[in-house]
Amino acid sequence: MTTFLNQSRMPLGYVIQCHGVVIRAQLRSLATLVSVTGRCRAQWNDLVMAHLRRFTRMDRPLILDVSSADGAQRGLLRSLVSTAESDCNATGAELVLVAAPEQRHILDLHHRTRSTSSVGEALQRITELIRTRRGRPVIAPYVG
Image 1 (cartoon, rainbow, N blue to C red):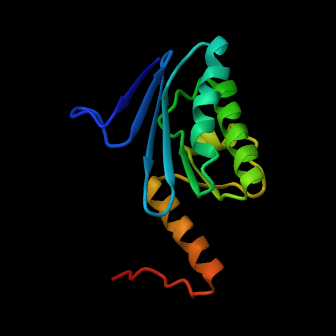
Image 2 (image 1 turned 30 degrees about the horizontal axis):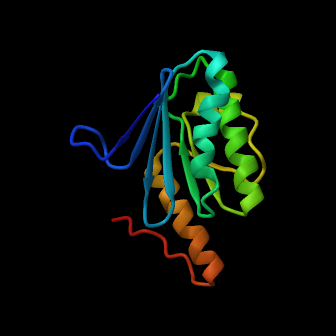
């Protein structure tokens, strides 16, 4: 396992390389964005879940982006989403999943979990949830 913090050639945020899986986390103004890419053997799934839990228990909205994860690893994807769902439910944090349509099809999503196909859409959903909670009307974006 290798951990990088804001090195010049690496994207901003916290990066963990764990036996073939790369977990990137960024604290955005609205939510924590965690992107998971790569592939690993089943024997390392528990270790990958432990690293993911660092970010699911932060008591703030979470965007989990698995759209670039290896789709062949259904077990790992299901475990990632299940872990994120249970941890977010325990803390009351919102979870938005970014996944490709074929990935969403194989996942058994909890009824509270929202899913989108892009990080931009996920950030918009978090914005809408925050505005709704504050009692402010949601203003639709201008379409010209």
